[in-house]
Image (cartoon, rainbow, N blue to C red; front, side, top):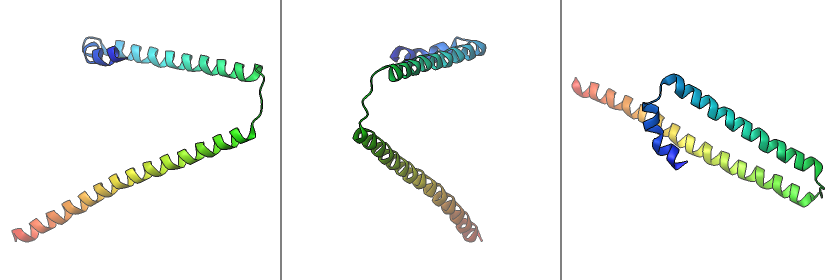
Length: 106
């Protein structure tokens, strides 16, 4: 992985655009095939293996998934809101500065 990251600039500069597109498509295809094989294996293992239902484990898993999803969404919303507020504040500041310079120029 490190080798691919370090050689990327060199290889992109020396490969045609058509070849770059072909490489991207092949990488995406191989990722999809690999993912499909993994989930097929997991599905087969889940269907054909002996299972023991553990209600506490299932309930706690769902609870923690929802809890961490909620925490993640709130953090994301907070960070996005702060960025949006900064942009709005910058726009308001720029408008006020432009109005102030117009007034001072008179």
